[in-house]
Image 1 (cartoon, rainbow, N blue to C red):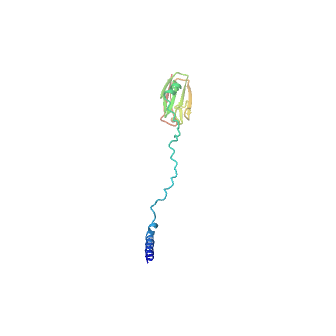
Image 2: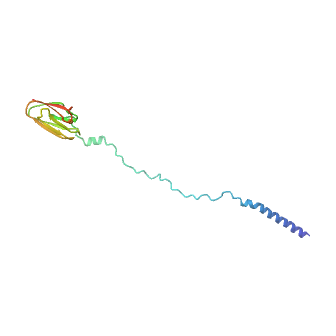
Image 3: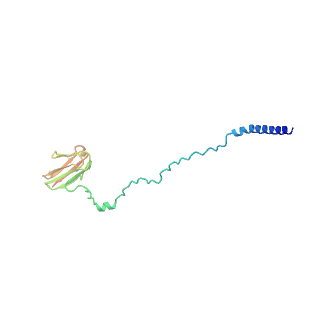
Length: 161
Ligand SMILES: [Cu+2]
């Protein structure tokens, strides 16, 4: 009888254990806390901050050195004697006085087309572009007025003595 009792107890114990196992089974099925291995850290290449920026050499403004080393000839400040400039829509100077036999030169300092046209049709010169010069020699005394036949407001006067 004892053996049967013991076996009964054992049997009950086994049943309890089995039932306990059955009860615990859902617990084992619950997903374990997320202990998955952490994402493999792929080493991302660090931004290349150490590479030096391409240095584009900015030329320093060479002010005094070049001025002293290469003296540029001073530009003419105005027309010389026996010379008339056309810096725009004007003859500069408006009047010049020259001795008989003087060759007067007109020079265009303007990109526009101009002319040097005597009011008495004594002379006519075309100054069609910047830098163009034209000359006329005054062999007789007198006052010679002229104008630009393109811009009538441009007038000038040569006094020959
Ligand atoms: Cu003109």
